[in-house]
Length: 295
Image 1 (cartoon, one colour):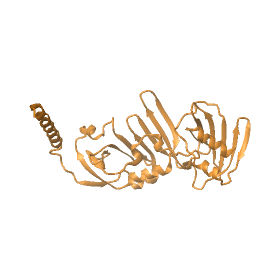
Image 2 (tube, rainbow, N blue to C red; image 1 turned 45 degrees about the vertical axis):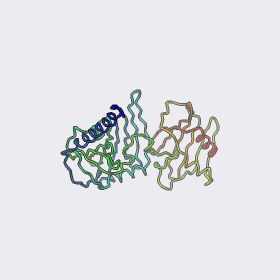
Image 3 (cartoon, rainbow, N blue to C red; image 1 turned 180 degrees about the vertical axis):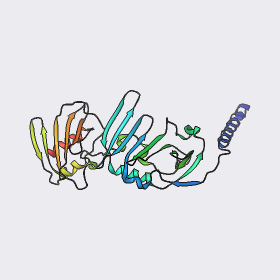
Image 4 (tube, helix red, strand yellow; image 1 turned 60 degrees about the horizontal axis):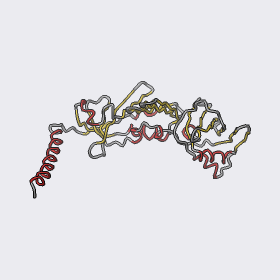
């Protein structure tokens, strides 16, 4: 065996040992802190939450409590453009995450030195910041960083607490600033109507023709309620090709305007009683299913 063949594995082993030692020494002298219990949101504020904001480096989700529903706003500030979309948030997702915030969790301090934020993914480049407001003026915020070596806990910085902590709380959708994680996905939005509210009938205008649609609890009627839309969009003064006005049993009017875009169809959704409007894209397949049902 040549000298080179002997030196190579010895050198690799030596460097490996040095790496492990440097890692262990970096934590030498760190204090071991006891676990504490806390909640990210006091349960007494659950019913009076007015806003939740989730923000990362280039995007944010803002959820505003409108009383009857949660209005979402997706803000994106990329290198080439800025976007701002309004949408009805999925009530079940918002409520699930409010429950997460109220949960009593265990936290453990891992460092007193906030200058080391980047080591824990808690710097502005990588952290997700979650803040909330309550109607009486109370506010709260915290930042969530990367997972620890176990992949079961995340590092956090909390308002009114000194230092960096970790917790094994599953943050769920609270770590996402993409609108698709938060919007009501249905073309007939479930989050904007009361439970049990149904379609009474609909008036359709397509080109110069007018139609009336009355559901008969058929398979196609049920399928209409299950149809989902795609990404959010903007109307951009498009020419309306078809309008459907759904009248619900509650008296609410839901107006859908349809216009073809490059590869799909853009839908503008309006609710008169709520003074609320938003837009999204649907596929040609979804558009065809709507036509087959209501015409």
